[in-house]
Image (cartoon, rainbow, N blue to C red):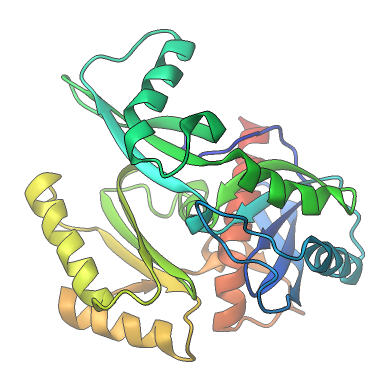
Length: 319
């Protein structure tokens, strides 16, 4: 099973879309399962303040603007999807890793135990939460679970703007999990331990995986006074000291910064601090682009979570 979480998964899905504070982005895949191709994409900007991602409060202040942007993006692609994979900001949800020495055998009992376990660290009533989980790392003495929780009302906000234009969100996931799926679904990141640093203007998420199992996840809000390379270095020290880490096979960095050139600067700083090559997050490692699509850093950052979600749905259909 993938590490990735969804509130509702029922493939196949026709497109993937991301709702971010800056824009609504849509992408579709063509080609065979073994040779996927990005057939088309569209990006429609949003007014400032239309979407403000938050774990504890309303996320979509102008549903009409978001629905219009979504409709315009689909129209520019000549697309009328009924069901899509929906990507929402990382900060609209909370990711926790929960460890048990003994795991209940019944799913309902495990669900209740997980809710009880994260209740104190969740900044809203657990009764109001959408919660999903998937197995993480295991040992002879314990099992770990990756738990994703969001306010039910928050999830409905994102789903509702899709429904306003006749689209059902058949799969909902956070942005960085879409990026991670890009590598898991294309068998590019499943050997050894690997580190992912994914930037967005509002946040940066850092994840450590051992093969396909998540071992660590941290979300760093934009405006944190500590330099990103220092945060990643501290994460690497934690990995060595507490997670029995023996070194990363790969370090991946990508996304969109608040300022022009911010991602490239972060890559150079990380390479200097970590003493190793930092690879770009590149969706073309999982799906080729048609000749009429010109690859730019901004487009690669936009497509990465969308391609990851679409590869995931293809894999689930084939399974």
